[in-house]
Amino acid sequence: DYGAFADCSGLTSVTIGNAVTEIGEAEFLGCSGLTSVTIGNSVTSIGDRAFKYCSGLKTLNFHAANCASVSYNWLYGVSLTTLNIGDGVKTIPSYLAYMQSGLTSVTIPNSVTSIGSDAFYQCTGLTSVTSLRETPVKIKSNVFQDVPVATATLLVPDGCSTVYGSTAVWKDFGTIEELPNMKGDVNGDGKVDVKDINIVINIILGMDSKDNYSGADVNGDNKVDIVDLNTVINIILGM
Image 1 (tube, one colour):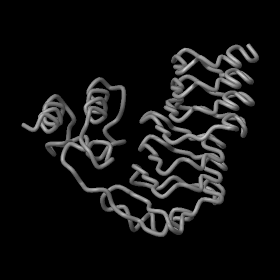
Image 2 (image 1 turned 120 degrees about the horizontal axis):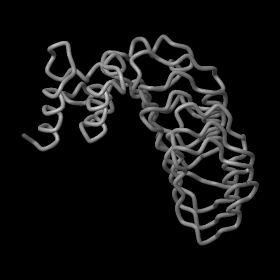
Image 3 (image 1 turned 90 degrees about the vertical axis):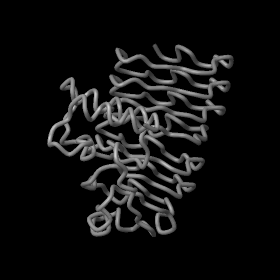
């Protein structure tokens, strides 16, 4: 309901479960002690002033795969320093990081297929944006409205700097660099970790497609199976 947890100043963290579809209006308004929020994958809308004046909120873990509606002032009075967009997110909604000047970097997962208007409006502190997609998402110029992209660095998958450099908006970044092509780096984020393991497992179980991840076929035998999984695990273990 409206304002269900408003002014709960002792609340320090919130996890919105995967069965929840809506975060209501003013739901956590004024929760000044809140430092971390995790939004589950089923959330499709976030109401007006949902986390307004949560002045201590620094970390947002956003896993909502298809969130279509976010109020422009849902984070008013908040200064995020960390925004983690989950690997399964397909839609980055409009106003997701509206006026979050404390953010210095953001990573756009390979799963993202659309980015809404003003998603990173006035994120003036951004110096680095990483896009893990080999094919750039088509976006409007206002996605990075008032962000100093001319002095920022765009990191893209190995071999993709040319296509990003010729694509509207993305080409406006002052520097476009390619991430290293590391064996076992399934999602192309420049490191081999548990995220890569989880992706390979999901592909083996049929919960994801190898077509989404060019590095999933680690041993190059044109299939993704237990051999690839073991290879990634061994790389992490230093074996």
